[in-house]
Length: 482
Ligand SMILES: Cc1cc2nc3c(=O)[nH]c(=O)nc-3n(C[C@H](O)[C@H](O)[C@H](O)COP(=O)(O)OP(=O)(O)OC[C@H]3O[C@@H](n4cnc5c(N)ncnc54)[C@H](O)[C@@H]3O)c2cc1C
Image (cartoon, rainbow, N blue to C red; front, side, top):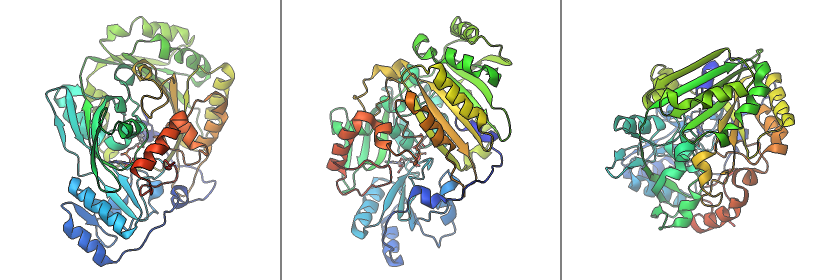
């Protein structure tokens, strides 16, 4: 079970307040431009420019999250190549229009839409696999493109579990997934990237060229420093994979969580596990453990039986099955084609925990989960540690290297409601939390710079001042120049 799959359980929701998606994503100031200016830009592009009068405007304007449908861009530019991006950014500068970049459009806060111009990199999705253990991935690729192409060639990269998420957003924010304890986050597997800054410069960025920007782009988040046009990743040969899971009664949740949170340190990096609390309207939440092992089913012994016995609970169901990478990352979605086009009005928040939760913290979390019966939603706890923690907190912009696990809190409600449950959960867990994941963006977090970036924020503001001093790229929780 993962963030995406929980959406299969969402149902109708109860109304309690009525704020709009517009208020949530905060409207940006912009100039309204005449059609002739747009037509001139369109004539210079290899890609497409979509205006509100075009038949495909509604689909071009929409993001994955239907909460933001009320935000109407003046235009969406679907850039086909680097030249298109440079021309579009020149147009933005000359006409002083607000711009935001879009890849997969999955931002939980609507940060890839605007009332100005959306620069959509979706057409730039070519993936080339090199024979030196690397792959060049166009910034517009989605995880399903990346996984399909790489797995067919016997390799993969560690990344997220939702195939329609864009490679740009997930990589720039860090990239949490089922293989990160073995191989690190998605951004840890980045060797180089190409980015076009606000002034139209194409910059090649790696450990020795523009290393400050390379540092910032590994966990500093999308939308802050320019438009990334391609990534080069280290790839890993695919291996035998085993999926294992257990369902528990909610009344056993405290015992299961106590045992589970020890695993970040006691399990080897090739073992990963998640606790998934599925909340449905007017129901008792369901608790499932999901795990993956890079190895044969026999490789999970004795870890699996030791964990099950440590839970002091009797699971209602247990499964251990060999799986291919394709089955793990793509099969469920291929069997349910509606997921590729599904759009959900979901809000999220998150925590990282560096120390195992004491029983008071566990009780606070479980009571909040148990009491929530108004909306469909989930709480997902993902084990961290392993290779993620082999990198120092200041070595990349992703600071949460010492976390034992991450927590994702999400509810899905109709777009005219802004629920606060997810943010209340974060506030309740503050005594034990060590920050939040910027990719599970929560616009209600007030101390977001500290929560997302901690001590790395000061350096990020300097890098912002160097590469985008006038804040051409600007959004409510965007990095500010120092
Ligand atoms: C259903 C679902 C499942 C998820 N599962 C996971 C998971 O398993 N692991 C995980 O780590 N995260 C997960 N996420 C979070 C996800 O990684 C973030 O929402 C990510 O930002 C989405 O990237 P995107 O390209 O799809 O989104 P977008 O909304 O297109 O972009 C996100 C941000 O990046 C900027 N951006 C986009 N493209 C570029 C570019 N080329 N250059 C510079 N900036 C750019 C945008 O302006 C925006 O600020 C999930 C999200 C959802 C909705």
